[in-house]
Length: 344
Image (tube, rainbow, N blue to C red; front, side, top):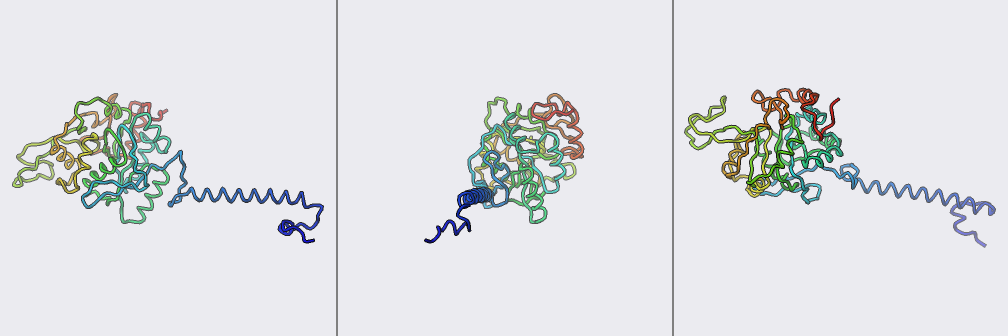
C-alpha cells in the first residue's frame, strides 16, 4: 500500500516518528509562511520613492505643478486634493543655497520633526512649510530629495528656482498654497528672519471688518505711471512721482479672499516687476484691498510684542542669519513662548 503523499513530502522514514516530526515541520512551515506574508505587506506599503507610508505619519512634503500657460490650478502630486483647514499657512521662501539657514531655523523657532510641526500647528493654528522651486542641477535636486526625506517639511513648486524670477515664484506659491490649504491667511516669509509663531497667530486671529486684507510692515514704493520719468536704481525710487504703500518683502500676509482673486487671474494678467514685494504691492493697489500696517513684523530686536525680527533697515532679513538666528534664540525674551521648546 503506497505511503501518503504527506510522508513523501516531509521525507519521514520511520512510522513511529511521523506524528511529532510532522507537527514540528508544520509549525516551521507556518512560521516561514507568516514571515513571507509580513515581508510582502511591508513591500506593498512602500511608496515609489522607497519611503514607508503610515496612516499616523502621512508625508506632508508635496510637489505642486503650476500651470505655466496662464491657468490657475495647482495640482498636488500625491493625489490628495482635499484642502487642509488651518487659520494661517506660512510659506518660508528658501533656495538651494540656503541649507545652513534651514538648519538654523530648525534649531530655533521651527520644529525639525514631523510631530513637532503637528504640535505647532495644533497650538497656533498655523502650518509651516519651506517653499522651493526646482533646478536642472541633478546633484542639487538629489540633495533636496534627501533633505525632504529626512525632515518632510517642504512645498516644492514646479518652477525654476532663480533669484531673478522671485515674483513668479511668489505668485506660484500663493496659488499652490490656496490649492492645498483652506486658510484664513496665507503668509509669505523669508528664511532669514526670526519668527515668533504664537504672536503671529494672535495677529492673524484678530477680528477684521474687511475680508480683503493685505497685512505687513508697510513702506512707500514708487508708482509707475509716466514712462518718461527715470528710475533711480541706487536709491530705489521714481524721481518726481508719488508713492504707494506696500509691505516689506521678508514677511507679509494676504487674506483668503485676496488670494482667491489672485488664483482666478491668468498668470500674465498683471505686470511683473523685478522685486516681488513691489510686484505684490502693485497688484494689491490695483485690487483695492485693505492695507493693514503692523510694525511688529519688522522689529530689529525681540520685545514683548515683536512678531518678526530682522536687521531693518541694514539688511532685508538678518544680516548673518545662520549665526544670528541661534543667538536670538538663546535670549529668553525671544524664545520664551508656549509653542517653542524652552531655552535653559
